[in-house]
Image (cartoon, rainbow, N blue to C red; front, side, top):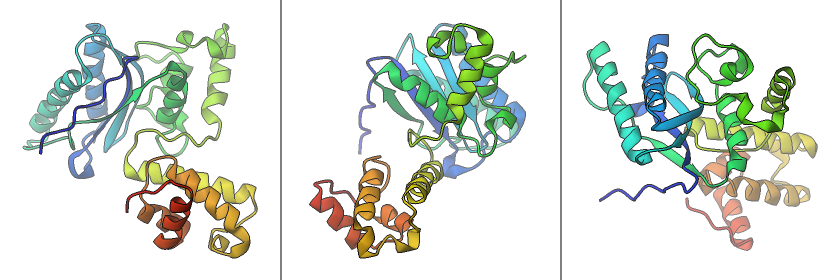
Length: 261
């Protein structure tokens, strides 16, 4: 079966994710993480793309880019081949390094740039300040190694004075939110679990009590809220909410929001 054409962003902004084949570690050492960033930086220096944000973890990496030349598939193919050649030579390996080329989502409106930057910077678990291979550090301090094409000065929303803008950016990054963008399955589930936790806490409900008749409204709200993210199947929603698939299906059918198993 032929591949579906990749969606083209009219704004030229893309959130891109590359993942190790079989979810294996492909950015094992610091030098590996630096290598993929150097490859992307080369295309930035050649004015083929601009890099607005990044986060490189062991199994996958996120990039927020704006393309200036060629198309996203051509650019990512070159980046992936360059890194795969490096990886296979260094680790005496053969075969595919990446899973399914790459994943991408179009950014149709620049108003989503900052939420996606925040999402990327919050990708590492724990304190993002302590994570070395994220552009968060480039935004808030004068890093010795720079991979970004832009910095905070590109976003007037945070103020004109450097100290003020950095302070506001840090606060913005720490705001709890329900934004869900392109991610590995584990990352999406963690994000949705946090959404569920906040909703239950706000409404003073325990997950084990969600199936009770008195909590029908909250049950419906949670099912619709999760389904509207477009990220999880009926089966997975039921698993997270500890509800059987029949309950989930009936709610979605009643509200004309049927999903796939």
